[in-house]
Image 1 (tube, one colour):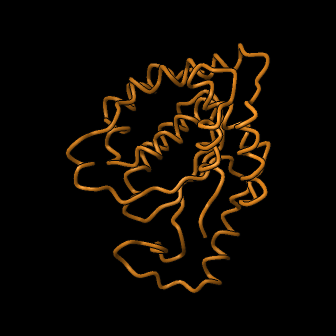
Image 2: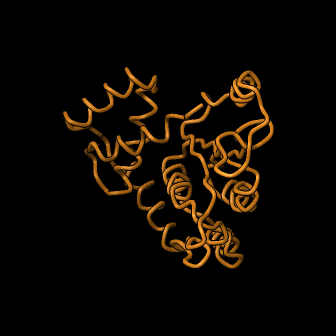
Length: 203
């Protein structure tokens, strides 16, 4: 998988990747999603979602695999568990909101966060440094005929599935992509630990 030259120009000339302050964990999730063609749901507050609109649109329109990337607010009013603003939604409204989003359809679920002052002063990793990793990982997955996990990793995922109601197959697929980003055919606990974080949501 590789982005077209026009895609790279769009993402870099307009600084769309770095224009999103902070949220390096979201960018990492997008990196994993693009490398493995995993669908993504990004939940957040109105002020954290707005800067991502152009980035998400560019990634979707330009990626050869047309990876499904969707943005949504955390609740009808937009401020559920906001650190500085009060949520006006009832628990029932919030449950209905999450049900309507159909989160089970997405392989990766990630929550954006409110950036800190230091995030505006120190831009994160530029997209030209990220894109080669995506390409290498996608090719690595195509070339790898067999993928296995360590016994420690399997114990971790079994415990997570029983306690957190995580989909085993989905978590293993994502962990395999994360391992591919490290150019490894063996899934280690660290790969599964990251995959588990993308497979759960706090409601």
